[in-house]
Image 1 (cartoon, rainbow, N blue to C red):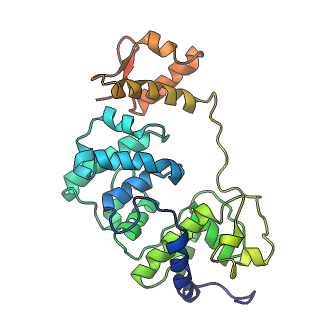
Image 2: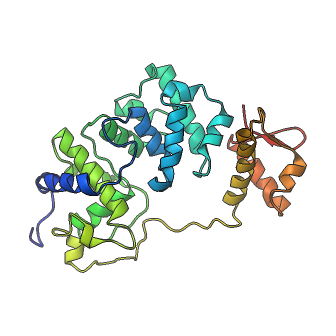
Image 3: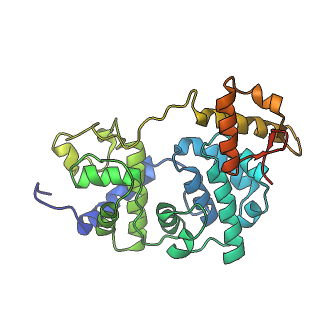
Length: 307
């Protein structure tokens, strides 16, 4: 490509064989990939992977699919079981939305994950990205998938600019559609390899250009990495001492009782007070957990998992 050339769909299609060869030797062996994964398994993996590295997701996904291999089995699980299985993945509201999603699939679609975009985005916890990912990765349909990693690779390799991060814009979606190969299988290869390259090679702060199958055509590399490191894709979030940590401690204490076989996990007020030294912060976090439907506060001020 010349410096004045705008990378387009024909260029993308020409790259598919190279990307497929790279995928077969370099992609991570994640359990929800490949022909053996169900559409439900793919959906669960996408929900679990929101704001969470895939390396952390694998053991939780494996346990979840062992317990609830279908939407029907997940739909009948209790909230306590669901929140316990979610463990330390973070943002536990996702767990309850996944259960509600399973219930909606059972009630509205006979227990089968729908293959229509509008039906998918109508499900609890399923947005634009997740619906597109399920259609592409589970059903092999031609649909543009746009996440942080794909946006970074497209911006750098094909447009020669550092990714600005933030939420996906209509311009991002339009560019993804503009590049998407015409044939179904090629479009899936395109989606999955760009995502994997962004996650493992073309990372936000330490890109490994020597391992990238796009290094030879990368416009960002050719122009000496303009803007590198100026716009981080995701800021590092503090944890110690935050409300997120306190909320996690409360949920962990309840989960521990479930794992110990307690039929109705319950933390009395004195048990709660022993969990965190700042009683005002602790109380605010318990109230917030109750507002989010993650715990239920009893009349005595103790907490349990919601019904």
